[in-house]
Image (cartoon, rainbow, N blue to C red; front, side, top):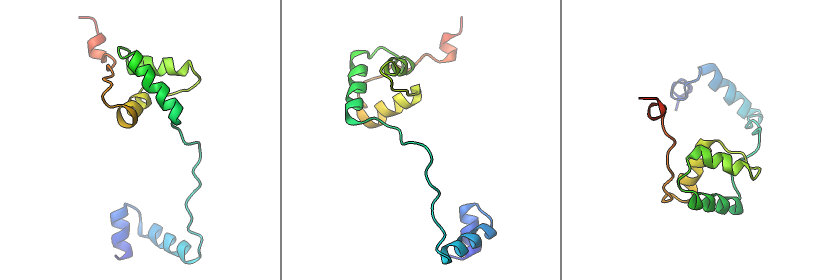
Length: 106
């Protein structure tokens, strides 16, 4: 693939592609170091989360996040939902938090 086609496909300028090629020739094209710490639960933390959700299935994701933070583990409600629904137990049936429309007075 040509450099201009690579630039167009990647959404960068041709100068960027040429710069990367030059760095690669010099052996200096290396990925930037990942800053920050990988998040996630170890197997024991995962079991605790699943147990908490099973024992408190009527709580919202936000309430689960608050309850889990009492054990020193901080997660946003979206992270709790993603973790539980995607990685641990998709059949637990978490209750979604009421939307702003549902909370508004009639």
